[in-house]
Length: 481
Image 1 (tube, rainbow, N blue to C red):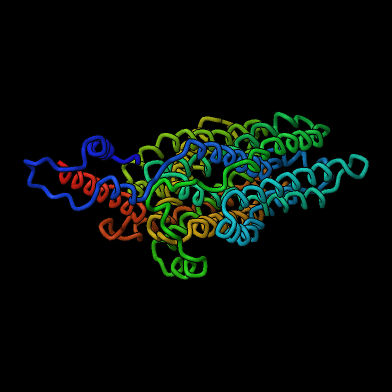
Image 2 (cartoon, one colour):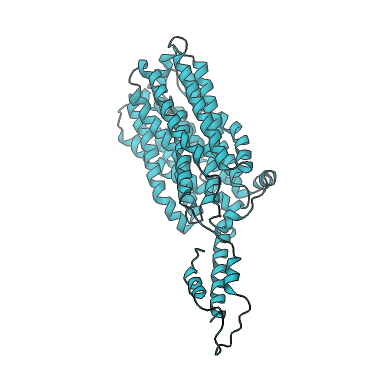
């Protein structure tokens, strides 16, 4: 049994279990028999295969979400649309569909487990991708915008089954020493897919005639990346730690506890607003930058910087937090930084077409936003344990996606018409709205309460079990001498 005290256990088991004649110690129980009855925990290497499959699903889901955002003008030309506003709905519809898919997703994870949820996600993503191909190839190559939109809706229904799963998966397969890092890898692969979409779509589509073939190639790649999800193990033979073995509360009881938990409500507000703004900014970045003379490639690179820098910084921060567990401190630092970045975005969009300003602000914004995601997902579960992790992640992600859809609609409505504004068609009013709401989140982390009243319940349970096990091992070793 792999524990911190296993050397003592090995010494004790290798020696005689009978006391010497000179010893005054009395052996009451056979230590070998005592240890054989103790719970056994084990971390399996196969957990990484399941994590990679989950990452691939999230990459596909996000790539599909942002396929059309960086080439919105080409999409509008292909379908002979009067404006880019209908193209925005290709991203927005996925965000609004997300909460609908989250309801069956939570019950699938709770009743059937992560393997069933990932299989459902893979099927819906594949089907939705090929419906999109029909949407660009039908009608003698002229396509059907309605069919394309239907494919997006199917993808939107499949996205929760992969994006809500990381908290459930890490709780089942990983210990408290690696949950944040594992959750970061799985959850942040979703925006990684967005970065791929931001870069690949403009590269595939340099002119409108290339649009239909680009959708076909994305569907082929998506199908290949979804296949590993059908072959992951359903659950580990042995739990990795005590908190993973602890039974979780039923969904109805978990929901009642969540809506009365102040810390969960505060994190829900922060998570929904900041994830919502990331979703809206990623979807509209091309339309924000183009009026000032930036190209779609410039906008795509800016979106990629936002995501790639965020992924790198999160990869650095997550292992540190797995060891220090300084969740609240980081939340209180990152939220004001994110708000300041959204304020700075108002002033970086200028007709001078200086790329340094937008790129630097996007990099800082990505670093702060991305490192905050896995922290919020894992810290909330520490506070509400043993509430079902699939329910907490489903509610948080549903809030972020739904609010993101609302923000896109509002920001699109605040956009100047093509013959209004300076420059015409700019989104300065949208950026001001974004900054004001983001600034309103700054006080929220300080409503979480004092640190001494917060308990990391899963971490405490695992630490208490390890301490008790070490104590029992030491006692049995002494008694056998």
